[in-house]
Picture 1 (spheres, rainbow, N blue to C red):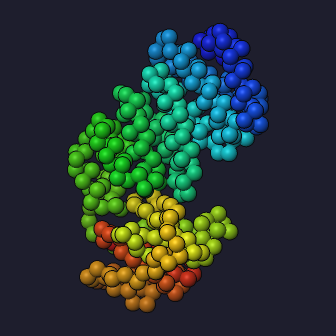
Picture 2 (picture 1 turned 90 degrees about the horizontal axis):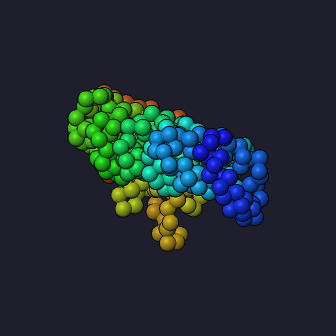
Picture 3 (picture 1 turned 120 degrees about the vertical axis):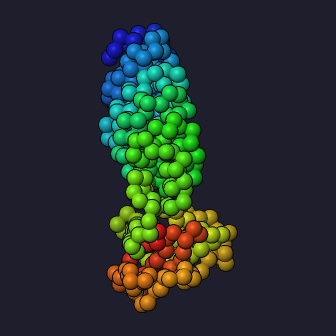
Length: 338
């Protein structure tokens, strides 16, 4: 353990021991071995990084590290046998590279990035490894805690949290242009307002690609059979309520949100059975035809027979995507029209 961390722990040993005993009463799985693995590993590296970047910060950072480790190890969110590796990865791979920012606001930053990693990890279909890589590589370019938190929000959107889309675009506006471009994978030197407009206009646009009318294609499959870890015990159907998609199955409803970086399902709270929307066979835009299991637009066509008998379809409010369900799949299939 580095000298600065050792001095802090030794200076208030009785108080630190008291905190451990109290936490262990709340969290029986908080063992000395598990706790020591975090404290002497990534916790030690983080205190050392902060002290090197901002001499004199070790005391406040050590206190924050100790208390956060008690909580995370006690809930098996960090340390040996953790429920997933992603919070531990934040402590090991991201936070030590941000020593100067951690020294400014240790409690806030450690908690914010740990919580964010847990949220990304808990979102089906999200890519926590990508989120961590983006924070690891781009985080050191942030000039303030606020910039880092904005970066984390945009990185979470890019890593599959499609419901962050609106907030992430606003957060990207608060970043330096070069950093905003990097986190959305736009070519260096691009004009951020132009890139932002393209992202806002077309949910399937990927920066650096050409905005043109694409061939009909399956852009995403959302949901899976409950027996294989998905949400649906029965094939879902799609409905529309207040301009938004709802996936219906088993008497329940989920909001469905999707774009080029991911798709997420969120439980929808409905007042009662009488309020359950009906599956939709919505109107198709001009030029788009569904003939049996084949979707056609001009000479372009897409065979949907793999879905079985089609049970519902609905257009997104922006006209960019058609959601389709069939009795042969537990997924909602999203077809990009732009």
